[in-house]
Length: 106
Image (cartoon, rainbow, N blue to C red):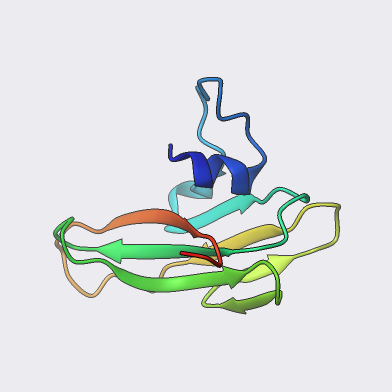
């Protein structure tokens, strides 16, 4: 897991994280993760690809402006909880997802 993503999720980048900090509940294509309450700058992007070479942004969350696009964010607790629900599959081919943390200076 990239260090920037570990920072975003509030994990310690000097230790190995055996469990993924996100989940796909009930086998649905819905990603849920809790962001660090300490991070206030940058943007989280959720990207999708059918071939692992061409990636398209399907959801994002701006941590400073608190703007969400294609995701829902619950802020009931101390840390924001993000949910991304993928649209129904339009083809029978594979779909791949990745998370990308982009700092404001990137």
